[in-house]
Image (tube, rainbow, N blue to C red):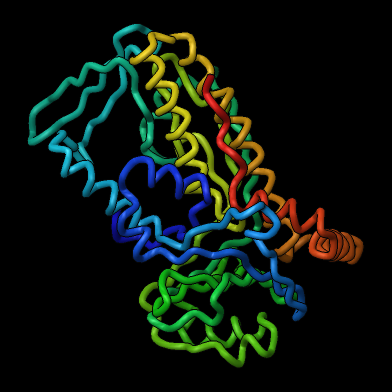
Length: 356
């Protein structure tokens, strides 16, 4: 789980949550605070000033792999038991007052009795699949393209992220550190990684960037290349009895809005606040509000990610009218103070809803 190259933009709310949890030391020293980002619109560059437009908020460049490493280290230091990748996991009696899990550990069957179960096991995990199909509703959109990503030990082409839209397709210039860069290209779903040499990738990236940006691009051998399909996915409700779905188990967003990891963090925040009040104040009734509270923020993040994806990518079915509408939509938002503020406040992350 620490080897995959994943998201690297943390919202202000997630940064604050990691600080509250006491696991922010490495993030504070190694993370890179960003006060804005650029949008390159067919060669025209516009900066979205996050800090100015959101009364001082920003985002942090700090990889999900590093967050995972910090959380695992804190868990190990606590001395509490953690079991990874146990087989044969099954969930039982989720609608009752005494749910439990069964699994195999070191060749022996184990039963774990619970008060509540948090299903944080991802899109393909057992948690959501343990809920009867007639008890949840699925909402999904699969996009007709993917992102080809390349990681390299090269200095980033810019101090801030660049989201570029171009007639050849979308591109993103991101980073993991001052010496490690992450770049993405929109590609069709039938593309294969092995058909993309480093030379081809760099050449295509340069063609989609403004000329002055392309001229500054430092290229080098790839450390990793992969293609990720894009989808939007939400299940309602996000709970079933005493099981709570958290993160990718309940929702997926296209990476364009940098919301996937951050949405998982906001789910954790909500569940933590609820459980604190349940155990410290006996407010059992709050348990039923988990899904309601989470979904308000989930759908707003889904909307922003869908919007960013819709206006920055070239869709195979787009006719001339649709292209003009897409261009006009972007031009309005980036050319309007109100439009830029809307982009900025969504990008830094909407406020966590209070649990009262």
